[in-house]
Length: 205
Image (tube, rainbow, N blue to C red; front, side):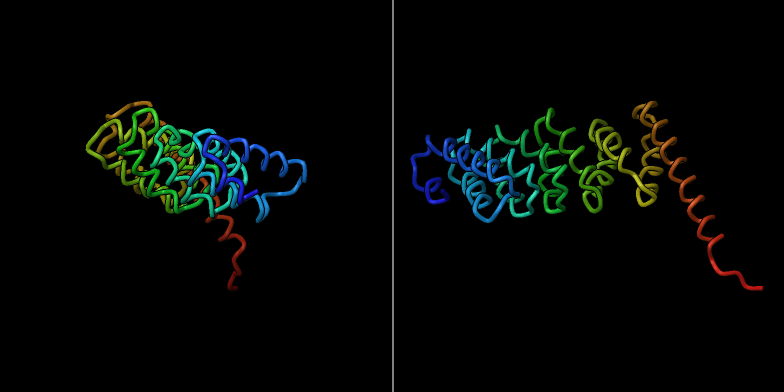
């Protein structure tokens, strides 16, 4: 079937992908070596419809091999970007963060919040672009980053959040209050953790 998606006329590639996915569902197995290459190939040479089907399936499978081809397909066909940007968050692979940061800062206004949300979902190093955006000259970029970062913030983001409140706390009173509440909750959790660790540590008598 992989041979088919690479040899049929582009107008038939959607049908090939749909058939492959139906076969995969009937076999009741996870994406195997047989099906994954078909979907990735479809991102390179398939029709728009074939790419839409492939992206949805690859996002569900969450295979790291799909990240770069998905991003490339969105760059080649911007109409696929909304689907790709949204899918990359739940997939949670760090290599998507550079593309998502670009979309968040320079992409279409309607996609910027989606990219910010995906960065927050990925977490870890992907929170870096959000913390960086808290210092942006543009107020909307700062607010976008702050709103996305709040649900994902940990003790490692406290410094960036405090700096934002100190320098740009007047951007939006509601966001600033939410940050203060979140920071207080994080600090409370840290204090409880430290107290528990202190209680469990060996005592010298």
